[in-house]
Length: 107
Image (cartoon, rainbow, N blue to C red; front, side, top):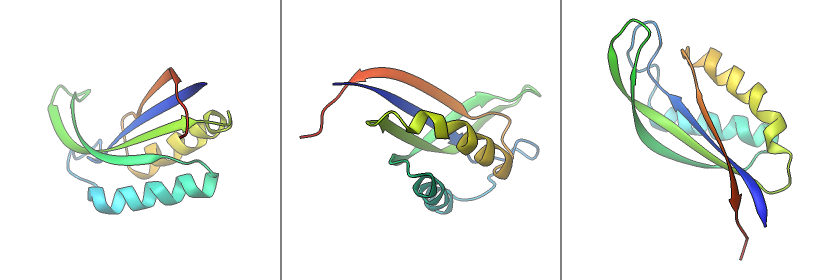
């Protein structure tokens, strides 16, 4: 069956100080709780992000990588609220969202 997969990358360095705002372990639990409150299932993994800050600094940071397969077509509508909240609360310059159309099945 065809579904939409969303991949969200949430960096953990504060946009102003460029220092870690929290640990991956704490952030992944907080993120899981937020998604559960929205009724959105996900797989959460640890990543390392590298990007160029608007000031020109190259930053390497721990990243929470969230993969959501929207099996029932309802998760997409929740993502703007979720992303706005984590962007604000983790003081992020941006949060990356990748949307893919995929073939998937539950076995």
